[in-house]
Image (cartoon, rainbow, N blue to C red; front, side, top):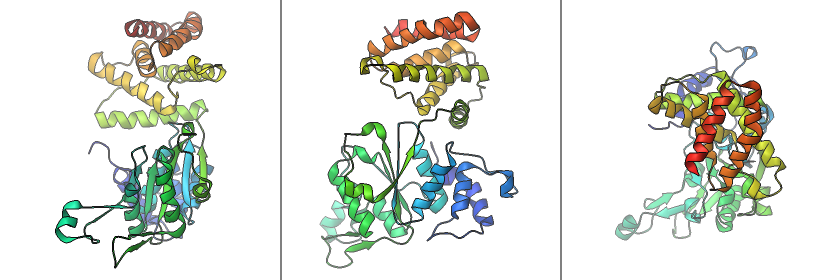
Length: 367
């Protein structure tokens, strides 16, 4: 399995938490709200458990608690924030902890239709036997309704208004009508059903949510991580997971992680002070993109280097990953190296010098 869903990856933890959970569970939840929070945010000594539960999502505790409270009600949950803030990962963890199934997912795109959130038909069975519940193909959302579990809708604002409007009746009425059938033509949601949706705040104006749909959701806004220590924990945690998947054993020196974090902080500050879009990188400069840069550098060192992560390789991965427009992004990165990295290299020396040289070489190769 290339990527195991959270309920498979952490099955042992979930089994353990379920065995020691004495709290009240809403509906058909597998864990109580307190245990759901503990699974997501990790255990502490005060929890009194005889085994450690590691932290899996790094962010403000209040965001997780409000999300859990929302799902314990009959309202949908909308996680909204910039790209790379961990919205989808939090949604997956919540679904895994609550119902042990995070795979009932609809991906919102311009091509998503109403059938993707309701139902479609097996054409060959319809031709052979006619329309029936047997020949119907339920969507992941309808399956979640029938099972009384959580359905997920990724990138809600990327889907068209027709698709969004179809969610209104599902969230308010909690059933789906099947007019093609005469009998057994209504699917009612069982207790425990709800929807966790995600949306990027940068997608405003693409397909804005109607006021009617907004009323069916509780909004939890996930901010960009600005605390350097928290961001370092996220990058280290996710990178280690990726490397285990690739069976790569290579250490990330703390000094190089500091260089990566500082570089992104500098580029974000430059983007915030830019007066036009031409002066900003197309990249969102998210934590997820930092993870991608670091993974790229590590794999390059593993396969084409001496299995040691170096500052020059990290700089090459940073430039190669963030330079998406040519020549605009290359000019912005070159300005950053000249105005910020070069003075720092002269002052601090060491790996900043190698980082400067690696960045310049990559820009020259891409120009």
